[in-house]
Image 1 (spheres, rainbow, N blue to C red):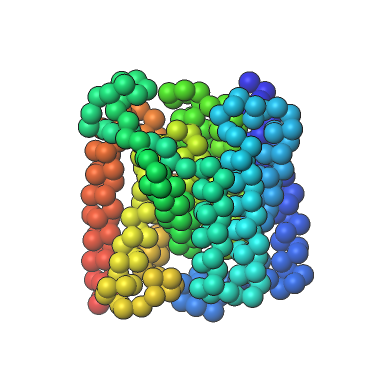
Image 2 (cartoon, rainbow, N blue to C red):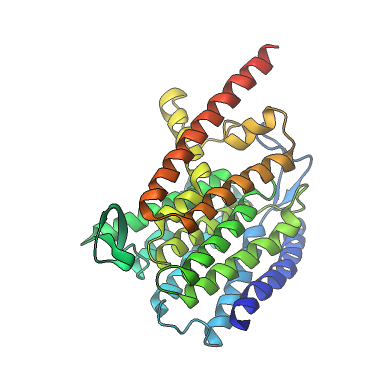
Length: 352
């Protein structure tokens, strides 16, 4: 069992040490986030580049585990490991440049290229479970196989969607790093104990969880450092990859990230069709900002979203595929009720 204790502890310690160093670097070169926009809720200038600490602590742990033979169960090929390393490195380089020089829409090429590299090196969805039919797959499940170019295309858009979900979610202290840790731990349980055990995948999940938790020590409200572009995108990138290599656990990832995904879809739809502006323009229409505007404290909003993630993510561990579809339906209804309630409450609050 030592193989499952070492990775998260190593990643946690590395993340703690690297976050402190990265924070000093960001302050020295004035790579900070200033509260110059309405959606910026911090009281002063906060250092960026925290994603570098998350990525490199994860990378250090991955390389040590790889060199120590902990990733040798044959479930993850060398090409996929390279896809993770190179994709993450691309995200970090573009994220660093964006934090330093404010690339704006040009930063889109980072996630795009990272997803292409990952898919090109073999990180693709081979199949998903058909929840409505019995079959000859694992545990009598029917499987829907992706043939030809469909699998790589689906994987590319899945990774891109996950990266932009966490990017848009990164509006409150500790939100993305905490949800990243929760999602990683749930995927660890899935990859190790469900269907065919995948030791190497579970170790990567633990490494990501440790990296996120180590950073969260500094990122908890009031944060002394932010993830920055690289961190918010890298966590989504890894959650997307882990859900693929753990056996196409897309429904599980959807339950873990359900609220953020629905929030992003709603906000993008609003920006494009109602406000006629770029879907990448920032505002305070996200769920977490609406909860703040309703009067909840910063920490209560973050803890509430942790709880929702934990409830629906944990439910995926005990539900069969068909019931996961039902759970996703419940999640959508819950999100709609919550959004409508908050919109009406905030309108009433403004009028009064």
